[in-house]
Length: 347
Ligand SMILES: [Zn+2]
Ligand SMILES: [Zn+2]
Image (tube, rainbow, N blue to C red; front, side, top):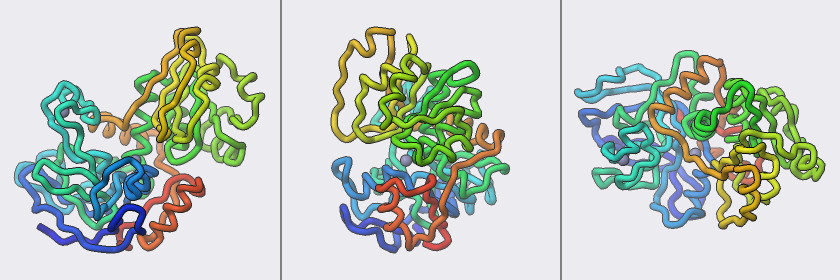
């Protein structure tokens, strides 16, 4: 066991504070990672404030981790000391169910994936996330960060990147496809970059035109405000795919009307309350309403390689650990362009 500095929420809704945690000894197939950067995901805030139901405290959030391998177990074959690596939303899964075998560990049916934090590991330990100086992770749940990507802008790819990449790939965003990204926050801005790099014609649908300039710079071809009713008339029947990154309640019928025949509306953001819709909105036009959660380990590696090949990471604001609580407030008021990343050396 190693004692490691970390930032933790001591209780629901309490501010995060500096503390220490214990990391397990490096096992046969483990890598010890010196964390360099950790992104702040909106779901860190939901969980630290117990917004998604029962949570384990103290909680060390953080599932957008980028760092360097400091030590490897005797059985590790994929990584060596000095390698640049990342860890995303999960640190293990059953490895035996059909989904795990198919590389869809995030949908593990053998007990579910083990979250990077706020979860109980196979050995009974509570998992602690990336707001810390080091983490010990099985090599099979660790991915390689290509040399072309700086670690700070790579960190948010481990959740925001894969969460948008996976559905864009699954629903065939690419040349000849019209894709709308709904919401222009941490997830949305990655959706724009990735959909553009995949070759799709990209439209941002955002509440206002406040971030229009950024959106066009990041690769969007068009940018519309959803607060303007004319948007819905003008864009009716336009899109093959709408990727919704927003967690505010939406008028689904209205957005489904923007799809072409056979189009899909895919949610990666989720409102806390159940939603309702008129099923004629999907019947007429054979439309799909779907969802998608992060991505598997293999696909996460593919996404990192893709981003490196296309020369982009996330747009970030680098902060010191002492600024985490302030950053949470700013995330909640959508005042970040577009992801806060903690410099782990300040923890
Ligand atoms: Zn996340
Ligand atoms: Zn499984």
